[in-house]
Image 1 (cartoon, rainbow, N blue to C red):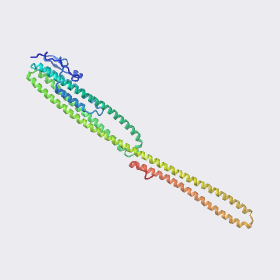
Image 2 (cartoon, rainbow, N blue to C red):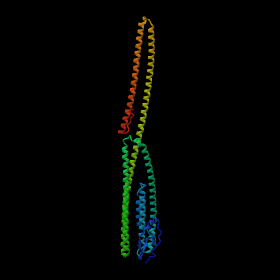
Image 3 (cartoon, rainbow, N blue to C red):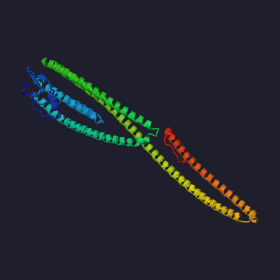
Image 4 (cartoon, helix red, strand yellow):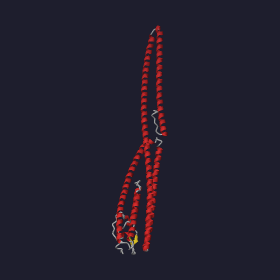
Length: 415
């Protein structure tokens, strides 16, 4: 028959099996001799059962599968879940080790040592797997932080581009569609935050139920220790049922987290598509704006050419007017000379002088009529210039109204 001292075997356990946080949250139990002893002060090392290792691996894998999309809000939630899982792992290891250390005296110490060594080997293997999973989780968190930084930088660039295009988008009717797209993205982001909060609440509720179940198991365990060996068998059955129930709870939690991860991935895809559509709209608007600028520059160049042609025409008309005035002055001088000669001439030359005066008057009337026609031509050209300017202004206002109503319009045909 084995004594209590012979059953106290020293087993070296991986540091991951009993986290420091578990030692601070361990309740006191009866050591079988009527004394309340803390589980931390028990002489034997804690042994991790394979079923508990499987539960731990499943819990950590379910946590590692959760994508860290939002570095500002979801990463602390994952750290809290990992800490809670580690604490629960520590508590389960303490209870299982205590149950294993307080087995009946009929247990064979040699077989028990072999079983413990096998469990230690499995524990080390599972501890290595858990380390790998934790490293993967930390890498995913780091990747999430980098992606969040890239996303923030992209958001900053998008904000800067949007500020540069704001003054030009005031004349484009599709600006309202852009606003609606941004509002939809904001709403989707709010829904994503709400779903993440709901998932965190559900996880907390499952954890509280799990802790309540473990507390009830502790009470049943203390009651069964006072009972006989027959009740000890019933206790093992209860513990197996509790382990199965914990597996079911872990499976449900993993299911919920998987559904939440899928919802997050769908939200990410939708946001990426909406962002690409918004960027495509901005590129199209920028292209239309450059096209309109080129057309405006072309129209300004043509208008300047027409103004130069009009100025040249006015200069030619003014030159012709000056020449006509010079000829009129010469004709007046000639008329004055002719009148002087007529006054000095004799009566016999009066008829000839009269004829010459009539001829000069006819020439003067002809030159006056030519001058009036030149002035009328100048007035007509000025009226045409004013009409051309008004027509250009009306066309420009019409194009502005059409761009305001229907968006960018190709004005190459009108020009």
